[in-house]
Image 1 (tube, rainbow, N blue to C red):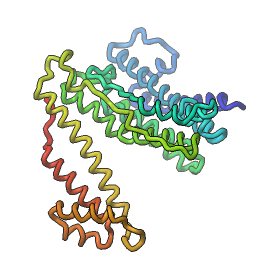
Image 2 (image 1 turned 90 degrees about the vertical axis):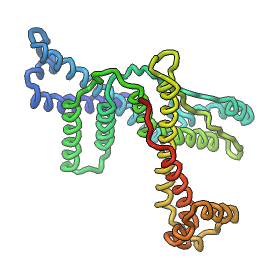
Image 3 (image 1 turned 30 degrees about the vertical axis):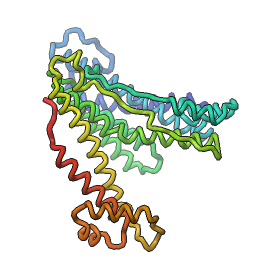
Image 4 (image 1 turned 45 degrees about the vertical axis):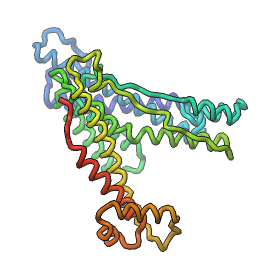
Length: 341
């Protein structure tokens, strides 16, 4: 059986599971529309309320089909990587850079391209996505449940529990209002955009850079490359002065403050994580003089040198991160919580 055939069969199985669970949820909450979902009858003769619910159920089903397709596609990519190696996964940096090396493109040419590379997706202030963030989060949790079900380690009982969790996610999706009923305010537009940074993009972009650096090291061993932060983001949200009459100087100021706050909170979370994890004793590893000098200065500027040293005795890395965290906390406190109206 070919990989494509196996992938199609898997997608069909996942789609069948999701459809059965959706029918189960519909039968519990709106049994009148189950025949419509099954395709046994048309929606002719339904009351306006039932017709609207039928259309909504069909919309849910189309999104579930999309989730099943994405899950099957990612599974196929992982299987391709396991069988053939990462350089054979189409559309990856690994394949692109490996093909360039195989074609005899010199490292210097790659360096020139990297120096000129600049990608900036722009998030629009007039999103075509009308679904609420709550619904998008439900879709994401359904996708994650499907990923959990891919594992072969589960017992029959555990697998049944996972399927029940998946059913609960579908039921919550059924009971959740899908669309925004009012035009979003500027603050809601900004929050909508920042949601995706907090949920995905803050992690995805560093991972993207890591993959490129790994591909370069693998395809051009012994060569050195400087990968600049070529992948950045732009946004119209809160700054669309020529398209939104409600965007003012004050609105833009508050939007910039919201973006700044989101970035600082991300840094704070990351530094707090490092503070928890890097409990490395100074006696266990050599500590570079430059770090000792930087720590001395950071402790002096922290205003709590004795307290930080007492809480983390002999752990110079933790002491340094504690100083960083204190500075971030102070910066966030000074930033305030103002949001665009």
